[in-house]
Structure formats: structure tokens, C-alpha cells
Length: 247
Length: 247
Image (cartoon, each protein chain N blue to C red):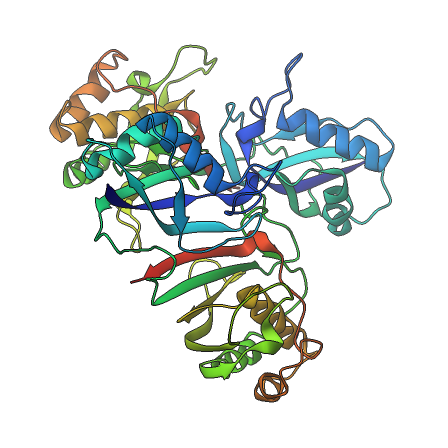
């Protein structure tokens, strides 16, 4: 059997996240149904990440086994006829037999978008966190730097994970403003792996730094204490995008 | 009575255009209903432009008469509670008594977005024209320049307009590529006023230049002949955004 890898983009607005669930439409189920219909065999896919309901992916990687004779490179074109406009197969290739989209990942980059303006933006309501209050962006930028490095991120994890260790290595964490529109703030976080809701809790904590409720200098203390009650709120899902997976 | 001016942003996806229609949800009707509910009087608004179904506005201006005691500056905050997420009141002010959002306009800027990639983009399906073929962008840029100036644009007008003259003055017409993503092409057109479907026909003509079906040098000839059958197809509505109105 071939081991086929594929890159997707998806708008998560209308899905209950990536992972298969009973009685809920998920991206995984939708892609498996489309692939199974196209290839005439039951396809099960392995995804690189379990994105939550409402979270988006700009570059998602999955793999699956198939006996198909269709060249892997042609699959996205055919598959896109089976998929609705909110999921696009971008590229596919025949991977090494032992490639696993989840376990082969060496790291991922997420971005989180904040619309920081008194008025909501109709084009960003499903794609950002609307914060109508003034935020101290310099403080947020200073705070972001403190997340970089190898740390135990227990304070930035929601209950429900099943990981062996809570140590992760963040290689990039920064807060930037869009050049054309200062109201649009992007939080970029890159790490070898992530804990459950980690980017959303880091973003919520950076927002509280912006509000002046947490100071930038407290971040190392919060990391060290490992106490979830000291970190900030969990930013809502719709601002989060999986941007890149590294192999 | 006060004459109140207001700036809106709207995502036109779910509306049958700006203008009031029987048996169809339009932006004008939605805004009038919200204002009437908020102010407790029947409000009729005058909009700066009649956008078509599916067309968006980044900065739309309207005006209306009201006896309200609410300061104009506070109105957007209150109104946004009555409006769904796809329309936002951004700003309001008390205008001169003779201000008319339609007739006072000295010019407008529209942008049209083309997603030029073999694969569709889930985030741009309602906000761009997906063109999966290679386009000669240098030729499109050269062609755009020919639209600048005062011309009779009869060849770039759909039937149905009621204008006295078909002469318009285009002050800016350019084709640009997004720096971060070369697949995203923007056509920007600025003029003193526009004919019906003018930006969409100019964009469709530029696309045909990109495909090699019309050469850049033919544009002045097509303008001069004033024959709609010589210009290109009408680009679909969802890529069009009213970006700015000048007073």
C-alpha cells in the first residue's frame, strides 16, 4: 500500500475541530468521507494536530494508506471536487512508508490574530479575537520574549492533555502589528510541540499584559510556578491558525 | 432635524446588495431597520453607492435625518448591538444640513481581489475571484495604465444605468501583487464616479489581458470604439470592495 501525504488548508468555522467525534461534523471525518468516496476504499487519515472547534489551518499535513493507482500529485484536484469551499487539498505526494504526519513533526508554528479596535470588523469576526480596549503593545512585545526557551509550560495548559511531559521548547514568540492596519495584532508562537490550548492561554496571558493586569516581568514567575490560576484567560478559538508544520 | 452621516463596513456575502428591494434582504433595509428600532422613528438612509449582491464595503458612507437626542458620535456603539456581525457602524457625526452621501461624493476607490492559484483558498472564496490559470501580470499592469484619464467608458458599462453621460475620469488604475503572497492580485480603480459594473468589467478585461486573449495595446481602441462586445467578461461580484469615498 502507498503511504500518501497531503497538505490542506481549512476554515474551521463550520467544524467541530479536526478530530473525529460522534454526532458532530469534523474536518477529519469530512476529509475521510471525501477520500473514501473518491478512491472507493475506506480511508483513515492521520493528522498532524488536533485543532479545536473554530480553529483554522493554513497548512495542515496528514497521511493515509491507499491502494489507489491515481498518482498522488493528481489527488488534490480530484479531491477538491468532493470538498466544500472551506477545505482545500493543496498538494499530495507519496511519502516514505514510515512517515506519520503526527509523530514525524519536529515543530509547528501557530499564529493568533487579535482585532484591537473599538469597533468590530465584519471581515474578521470568525478569524480574530475582538478586543475593544486599549492594549499596551510594548508591554505585550516584552512579555512575549519571556516565553522563548525550554520550559515546563504547565501553567499554560488546559486540563485534558495526555502528554508524558509538560516541557516544551518555544523557539519563537512575538507580537507584531500589521503594517497597513495597526488594529490587527498577530501573536506568533513556534515550538517543537504544544500542550493542550497552549497558544490560546499564552495569547490570553499576553492580552492581560496588554490590559495591565499582568506585568511582563511576571511571565517567568508564572512559568516557574507552573500554576494555571496565575496565567491569563484562554483566548477564543476563532483567532487561532495552524500556520506551518515542520518535518 | 439633524442630518447625521455615518461610516459603515460590511461583508456583502449574505445580502442582495445595498439598495432596498422587495422580498430580499439588503444592507440598506437592514441598516434602516436597526436605526429605526434604536431611535424609535422611521429612518430612511441615503447611501453613497448601490453595491451589487455579494459586493463588500470597507468604508461606506450614508446619511439620514433624525430628531434623536443621542449624540451622533455615540450612535455607532448603540447601533452595533442591533446589527449582526457582518455590518459594523464605525463612526457617525452631525453633517451639514445639505450633505448628501450620494451626490456630495467627489470620487471613490474600489479594489478587486483575484486569487490566482491552481488551488482555491478557503479563506478567500467569498472575497475574491479564483482564477486557476497562469496570468501574464506584466501585461495586466501595462494594460491598467491605459484606463487612466477622462474617457467615455461605454465599453465598460453593463446595461441598466441611467446616467446622463458615460464619460468618467479614472485617476488611478493599477494591478498589484501581495508582497507576502504572490497569488493574491489586487486591481485598484479610483475615479470621480463609476458606471454600472464598471470596475467588474475593467477587471474582467484585465483578466483577459492576463490570459493573452486581449493585448494591453488594444485597451485604448476598445475605449475609443465604446463597444461592450470588445471588452472582457464581467468579473464576479464577491471580489469587489468599495474601499473609500471621497468628499
